[in-house]
Image (cartoon, rainbow, N blue to C red):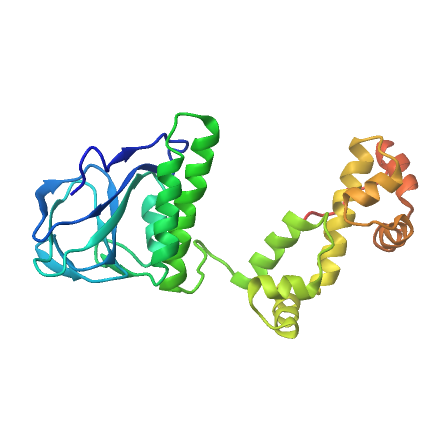
Length: 284
C-alpha cells in the first residue's frame, strides 16, 4: 500500500513498544496491495473514502474514521474503493508489550476494526511522526511519546473499563495507594485522589477503610512518616528538609504527625534509631 516516498522508517527507542515506520496515501480508485505478509503489526486508518481489507479468510469494509489492525506474519490484501477511494494513514509497530497495548484499545486477532472520531488528531500525530524521523536521541523520545499518543486516541474511543492484571482485592484502592506512593511529596488531597480513580470521595473512603483498615488520609500520613523515618536514619538532612521531602511544608505539622505515630520527635527518632533502639515502621 505504501511507496518508498510515503513510507518512512523511524528510529526505535524501546524493545517493549516501538514505532517502526508510518505513512500516508490518497489512494487512486481501485488501488490495491497484496496479498502480502507483514513482518510487524500495522494499523491503518481511513481519513476519508472507503477501502476493503482481507485477512484471516474474512473481508472488512472500512469507511471514514475507521481503521484496521494487521497482525504480523499474516496474509493481507487491501483495495481502495473504485468510486470513493480512501485517504489512508498508517503506522507499523512492534514490541513485547504491543499485544497488551492493543488489548487496551479493544483490538486483537478477533477484533480487527476500530473506530476513532479524532481523525484530525490522528492525522496531526502522524504528521509529527514524519517531522521527527531523524536519527537523534531527541527524536527517538519524541516518537515514543507520539506512539503512545496515537494509542491514547484509539483507546479513548474504545472506552474499555480499566482492569488490572493479577489478583487484587479492589482495583480502586490499589490504584489510590499507588497514586499516593508516587505523589506523597506533593500536596495530595482526598478530592484529587477520588478524581484520579473516578469515584465519589465517600465511596472511595469506604472501600479504603474496608481493605486497609484506615482512611486514605491516615494512610497518606503513615506513608509520609514511614518515608521520613528512612530519611532520618539514612541521611543527615535537617528535620525541616526531611519534612519538605515527605510532603510537609510546615515542619511543626510534620513533627506533630511524626510524634503521634512514633511516640517521639524526629530528632529523637534519628538518635534512637541510629543506636538501634527504635524499630522501623512497617511499610505500606
